[in-house]
Length: 170
Image (tube, rainbow, N blue to C red):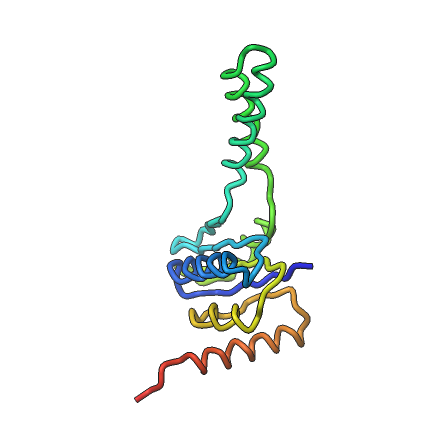
């Protein structure tokens, strides 16, 4: 079972840096992500989702390939690829994988204008490596799918990690 973490940041750049760090940690096999989305609340109050994976593009690509193959059977590969690509893009645009977009928009409405949040849907993680790597960016945990006790433990671990990595004051 996967766990959802939503963490608020003071700006879009920090939220993107956290998502990029999570993706880098995934390449190191320290975390397995199902989804990683940055939700931005713009100054005008509008919510913008910055998806990691474009289902529209993936659908168009696979549709074009399959359309081309089917088109070859009927001696019209270019027409088949064009129709398949358009159909794949349409299906991809309506497909929602990972964290529900409507849910992220609802949570995003609670952010202050000009701020952002990262939504991470985590299948597995090596907590003693991942928490310190992400805690150095700061942020505030605004929602998790953990139990109340596990969420409190996570917040305490994050605070301890921040205290440990904070520069010493003079």
